[in-house]
Length: 290
Image (cartoon, rainbow, N blue to C red; front, top):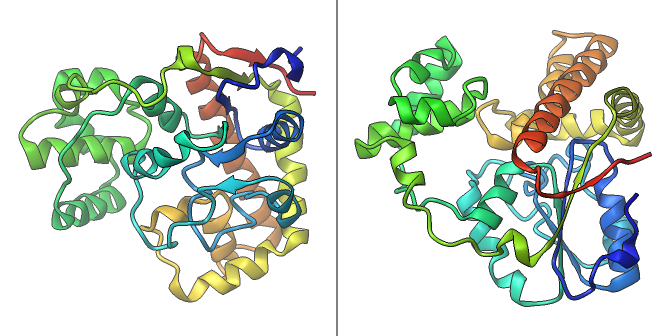
């Protein structure tokens, strides 16, 4: 069982885990006991707009400890792991960082380095978006080089699309660019890394309970406020529950059906996270939440 006094107060702390597992609460405990600043490593919590559905820390928690990189990106702006690394770099030199989130790729890039891949033209991204939305991502995956196919998650449409865009724009596969990766900003050996290993049934119950609490906290009103500018192509629109609540507002789903679909989507997302963490974070300190 994790004991905070076992963590050196001089080491940066990394806290990864699936959605609804209690990561933010642990980060607050650590900062309250040892000091530091909480830095967000969740790819959806960086965006403004969807505060409730992305489970950003509540105002009371934000006031209790210094939090950075939450809601600092416009809801309709593009944002990548490269953007996140640039944003977090100056913060690593300040107060002792406690980095918390559920985006495994952010932690991987931070501790293992990120390939410096040239930007892809907007027109190419628009072509890829149209193709993904109209026909799915299997065709793009089939066009990737064999090395890239072997490395990426074939079930993740956005990862496949990104790899396809890179190959089309540069003439070289994503695997080639990954092999040119520079040294990491924060090597894993210089941190105290924690990964949540949550029981599936325990987590499923928490996910369901939390989504109902989100509804009580105003998630429908949040969706109504975002509705006039809703665009499913925005990265922020991937917030779990956002497409379902928009569908409810558009009279395509009843509220009960929207809630059920959002809970199922959240559980599926948590399953993908748990699989990724178990595969990529074997060297981290495992924490079983209760």
